[in-house]
Length: 184
Length: 184
Image 1 (spheres, rainbow over the protein chains, first blue to last red):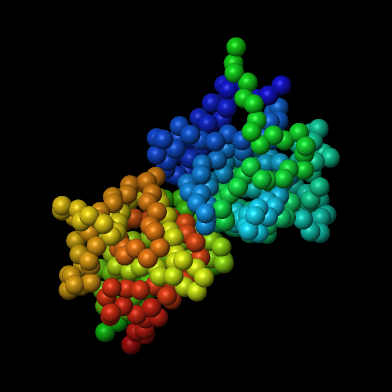
Image 2 (tube, rainbow over the protein chains, first blue to last red):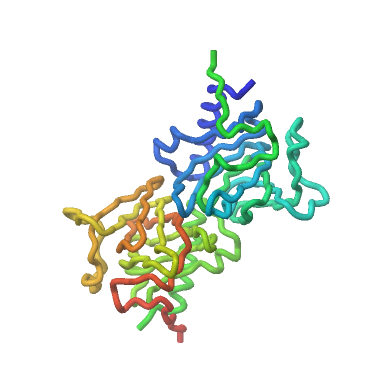
């Protein structure tokens, strides 16, 4: 089983609408190319991420990330790649609320809900809660995952160069280049 | 003569209000620390820039730039600094309209108005017009200046590390650390 093309299209549409509501303007080309990361998992509403990459060159990268209500970006880290010490990234919440979990002292009780059935693949629980205007910088090589609150969330990501294909996910079921199932 | 403290405070207030209008959320601390770049020149309304630096580390930088209606950021370039080949930066228009001028074939007629009395210090006239959602990346070492249209402008700047103190301005009157005149 995999996410269907029609679900991906619906997620693109929902993302475009959310950007519109909060006044983030995209070009028509950007709207048509909103990336829906399904991670090769089955339930996009549970684990997935919608994004626009504004720029990714050999020095820096800037993206706008969208999470629907309760949607989770699965746990992963950015390893060193060649002479690059690994992606350093700053998450700045623009809309909604996001709970970010990183390595370190586990929080006494976390506010997010670990996606059902994927519990073994969530291993870091040091919680950082981000409201609009708040930001946090994640060191290279640090495991992290994040989930939106009940309104969903928009997060600006400022970072060093993105090399997503090298990301290491805790869940071995995650596929970097997932198969999208064409509707019948 | 220089820009007075009261003018700087008024510019901070106006900038905070504009961010509020377009839904860009700042923390209270960020609002209190909006940078007003007077460039040591006399007329902030003519030549100046308001900004927030979200993050500036040894790998990348992200800022939000504000220009009031008709306000101009004076011509400058980002030179190599040590092992850094010079700042590479992407301007993404978020609100209003901005005319950006870079080295290259001069445009037949430019839409911006060169600040009166500073004509000798504006030497590049290849025009790029940016509306919300549009962006342009400026190569290191390239002279550039920019001016907002009649509504003002907000521009997100994504870049390699900022080392503003090394910027080279065409106008020798520009001071990197300008004197702000205390009100009497």
